[in-house]
Length: 119
Image 1 (cartoon, rainbow, N blue to C red):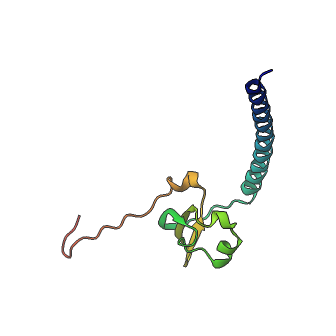
Image 2 (image 1 turned 30 degrees about the vertical axis):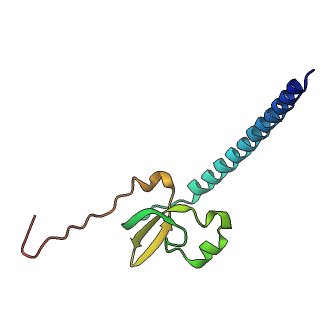
């Protein structure tokens, strides 16, 4: 066997091993996600709230409490997270939400009209 063939066989073997490892890691992550989704579904509640602002902001700029920022891993602190500022009862609170529902949340539209003008 030539050296080129031997090197290509070694690279192919390493790639096959990597694909198998990633397959099993993906299956494990999928199971964890399904378990977490079941837990979320078990404790979810319906609450009426007035959405004030929504968007993707950096974790530090979103206005979350300091313990949230401190308990976030360092490599995720600079990433943007979907956040919602809403009025729940008498309090204005900041929430982190799932990215899939961020676009479906409605925000109120305020129109500024000059004095004496009506729609």
